[in-house]
Image (cartoon, rainbow, N blue to C red):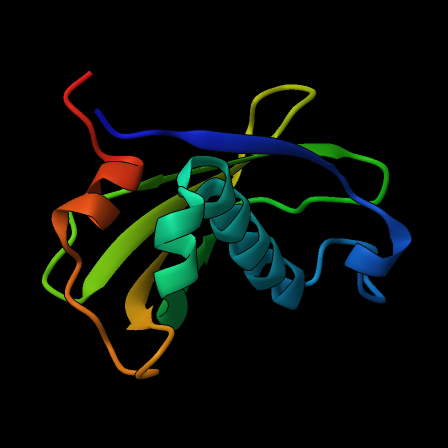
Amino acid sequence: MRHEFQIICDVEQQHVDELMHVNNVQFVAWMQELASAHWRKYVTPEIHSKYYWVVQSHQIKYLKEARLGEQLLLVTSVAEPSTFRWDRNYTFYRKQDGVLIAEASSTWVLMDRTSRKPSIINDSVRAVFLSND
C-alpha cells in the first residue's frame, strides 16, 4: 500500500505575486514541505539518523490559478523506487470546490548521512512508504 499524505494550506500574502495568484516558486516550496512532512510522519528515528533526501528534479503542470485567501489541499504519494531514486507525485486542489489547480512530480535521491553520497534504497527505507497493508 502506498501512503498518501496531505495537508491543507491557506494562500497568504507571502504566497502570491503581483498578479495576486500563487507564485510558481511557492508551488516548489510546498512540494518540498509536503515531501518532508510525509517523510517525518512515517520514518523511524533510526532510519532518519542514517539517511536524508535531495531533489534531483521537479516538474509542474499549472492548470488553474490559486488566489489569495483560498484554501488548498496538497496531496503527495510515492511511486515504486528505483535503486537510488524515488519519484513522488503531487496534486494541488482548491479545497472549496475540489478543482485541480496543479499536478507535479519530483525525483528524490536517498543520501547517506555519513558519506554524503547516494545510498541504495533498502527494504527498511522502502517500508517507510510501502507496506503490505
